Amino acid sequence: GVGMDSCVIPLRHGGLSLVQTTDFFYPLVEDPYMMGRIACANVLSDLYAMGITECDNMLMLLSVSQKMNEKDRERVMPLMIRGFRDAAEEGGTSVTGGQTVINPWIIIGGVASVVCQPNEFIMPDGAVPGDVLVLTKPLGTQVAVNAHQWLDQLERWNKIKLVITKEEVKEAYQEAMFSMATLNRTAAALMHKYQAHAATDVTGFGLLGHANNLAKQQLSEVAFVIHNLPIIAKMAAVSKACGNLFNLVQGTSAETSGGLLVSLPREQAAKFCAEMKSPSAGGQGSAGGAWIIGIVEKGDRRARIIDKPRIIEVPPRGSQAAVRNPSSCQLSSCPAS
Image (cartoon, rainbow, N blue to C red; front, side, top):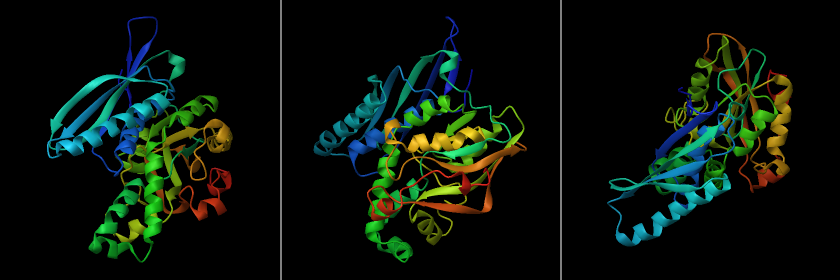
């Protein structure tokens, strides 16, 4: 009855299952409203990773910091709550309750629940040799958020100012914030349309950590080999300039509310990516879409990133680079072709 991203509990009635998940974390962006949206998107992603597109109910978990004065509390907390509720509404569900406490830290998160028939979810265990791996959001959110904080920390800024401008930091931060707040609902729906075999969402363990967790769950003896890393523009260079602080290219940099890592039949992957990019399917604009990042081969249920992966610089949406070079999904970018 235990799933990977969500628990799957068979019910006593009519072949139905309860799929449920919970998550929470500390604020990482400066905008309280966007923080609420990010928290909700992060909770729902565990359902979306199983191909579930509908959520029956959400609860909100909120911790108010005892260090905040009453004026700040009355300004910040309602914005966080509204952001969470707005994202839930965008996901076709609503927040019907939860719990609020006083605590040394601000914490926000929630619980998402849905009752499903078997054809409404995809268990994360069906990858087979010959599949390709697709990622639906660029990496580098933690690096972007930290780089933005370092604009006011001279010692930290001096480490990265040779590889990035302040304007580029601000653009990357905005891209990370909007990416984290974007629901993975479109990707969940397309998992069914294009016969996905397995998926997980990429969050705190980083790309390699979650790829390894997914590989361990597979029924077949497979290995995941990652060749391409789509990363918010300049974040790979910032990570390198910081030494081993993030290990972004090594795949262990934490992500918040990241994309879905999906194992798809080879003949379906490019079509999945193209539809993710399409505005008619709710595509995420010039910086959105999806990228083929690796292959599934016979192996020992582990994941690895090749020694010199191809870095795909994903320009922040609205930037001049994004206007000049809109992103796309190309099978030729990966040995899977």
